[in-house]
Length: 502
Image 1 (tube, rainbow, N blue to C red):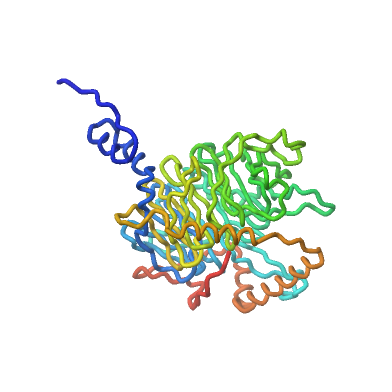
Image 2 (spheres, rainbow, N blue to C red):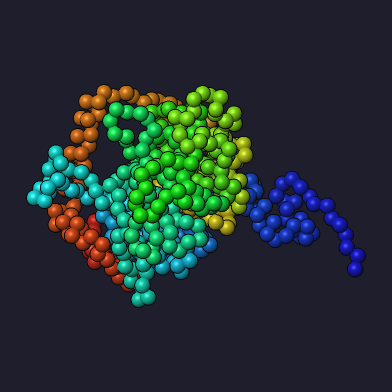
């Protein structure tokens, strides 16, 4: 039978359909081009809402194959969803005492193991006979927990590790049902192996700035693992540097004394800055590093843009790379700890939430805004792309998870008042100029914050609650499930509070 050689038609998405029908494009190629088409991205709109939480939703993640979604909230509950049918399949009390910041399904566990982290610090004091003392009070035991779904449908939760500050981020080793990392505001990075059931302290992250006093901890907000080379992971926090480490350089017995990274990334104009910090990180499939700064912009670094292991080694400007990172602007990241993500089968797009309540999607290669849409009444904190399809899930101050997908409709890809939105975000960012405070003023503010925090916890938790949690240690908590309603034996009369800024 005679065959005809057809020439591939280019330019635009409609020709892709023709190429598929003419069998010039394979189904896999068509699917990839379909998902990455700007026409499809411009059509993304609200597909549905997942309602069930009683507090702000801070964490949302798709399972590695995309069929299940997990969420965590200020209500201290974890929920699993069949996002396609918009139905809740599981809800359980996490065992945390405060806001859940991260919730992740461990791969290859049949959705039976879920790890969480939170802001559930409790009050401690110096000395065995003193419990509440304004002079000696401090926060401790911010926890990382594991939820295990049992055969009878109940969920058992237990503590895996703890930090001396809020735990904003967890990173799961790609394809591993056992290994993950955590980082917290105490500057500590920990390694977990669920086969051992305990945490291994890798190192504390310290500031590069030279001081006469002991080095300061970096308050860490984000940790991610390079999917292309899982031996490398990156962390970011309360200074300008995104640090990259090699896990092979560290022992898992807690005997490490060095926190020296293998590489640093920072925009040239932010070097030695005292007024910015990192809230979100993301790796692309090609090991590009995406960094989101508080009250600054988003930057995309190629692997060859690193500064080396220490900024102190940069003796002159000539040692800096001549290449500048790609910059993504228009949003504002100030009031909360926001994430940042890639989107598309080959990470063709970059997306972020904003203080203005909008979702921003840029084309990666040239930073052109291609889609801006309202994602929350106040603030969009986290965006999670589906691993296989052009869908995404978002969360923020609203008490729901929002689902987004290409939809038929005539809504413009960019709002008519886009210039007003971006200009307002720019103006607010520039108006938030850093102020220099004297040391005695800083100490006074810290004392006031401690007293305020003390009063908050004293009102929220009774002394007996705190004492019982300290005595429980690693004790398991069991949640029962009946008629799709989960109750916690630990908090049977829980009243959920208002949303809080993380």
